[in-house]
Image 1 (tube, helix red, strand yellow):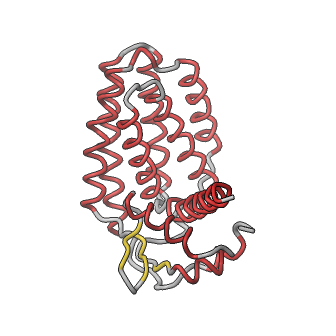
Image 2 (cartoon, one colour):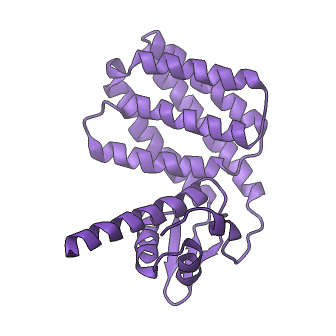
Image 3 (spheres, helix red, strand yellow):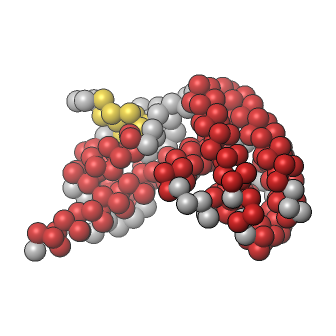
Length: 240
């Protein structure tokens, strides 16, 4: 009986964690917004302990900060944060593409190339365009490290990618997304042709450009936040 209850508790915690994290990474909850256990518990219709566990996990991942007796605040995105993430990304992902270049699935890479070209040809910018790009970008980088034997490196990269997508969720500049797609296509072309040196060079250039673009956008976009828990929680998931 105890084991069943424990498993159920973990399941609820996982759902709370994934839901809150999705709202943050997708940009629906803005940096600087306060999240309070009691309100989240009522809105999700679950008890407070799974909410607390989910928030503790999100703090360890760097998405929120906990303040005793006050609540939890969604972490502010800063220029330093972006610099640090991209520095780590450059070291780890460039290492992987060098180390496992010959193990990257050409079939997946070609499929992603066609998908990138498809959304580029649609010439439509908006929420759908942005989410399509972010999902394909995630698949692309996962294709590069999927055969890595070092799980610790992969875990760090996955967390970094989620933070990158969190940053990009605030982008409203069409050109930055189109440029990123073209840069990814250039990297794919080099991988497809078996040119490791060129692939590494283009990926490094892509990181430098993406970092500069993000820093510029974040410094101008993140001006106003409200000290409230967004109402959209009410219609998200029936937790019963």
